[in-house]
Length: 126
Ligand SMILES: CC(C)(COP(=O)(O)OP(=O)(O)OC[C@H]1O[C@@H](n2cnc3c(N)ncnc32)[C@H](O)[C@@H]1OP(=O)(O)O)[C@@H](O)C(=O)NCCC(=O)NCCS
Image (cartoon, rainbow, N blue to C red; front, side, top):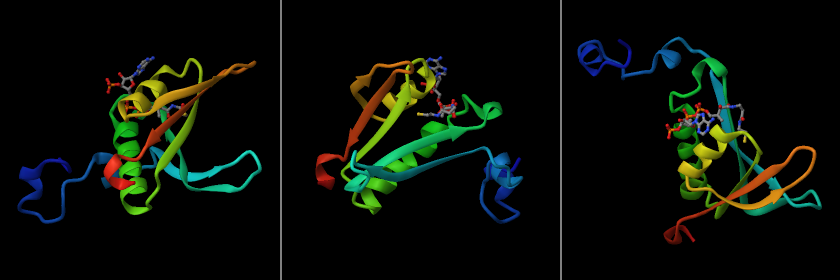
């Protein structure tokens, strides 16, 4: 009902998801500093993090939130490169990141193997 434009049309406000209307915390997503091996933030770069609570998986929230932060980073913050790291086996996360345009640039083997992914700003933003 909260999302239904036909309901909202005559009562004011704007269409909202049920989660927003009920002020539920369903996860977090954001851009964080990307630190060099020496521990300093790398100018023009950021790291993307995505966490969605299990009951809300598979509804497109990570894709939507991830895209919003990518757009914000490239268009508002002037970032030119976004990185992220995914543990091998986290296929849903890899799939979301690939849909968002990230490419795996290296694989770090170990007791836990990690994929390092990168997304570059579109040419017109550089
Ligand atoms: C990974 C995570 C962020 C995805 O969140 P989400 O809101 O469920 O993601 P979305 O609904 O936007 O998209 C999920 C996609 O993965 C796909 N998917 C689900 N399980 C999959 C699997 N085992 N293998 C491949 N793809 C899978 C879905 O089909 C969907 O793709 P589609 O839209 O093309 O059909 C969420 O599962 C999560 O928070 N996991 C725990 C924390 C985590 O791993 N964070 C990422 C750290 S890098």
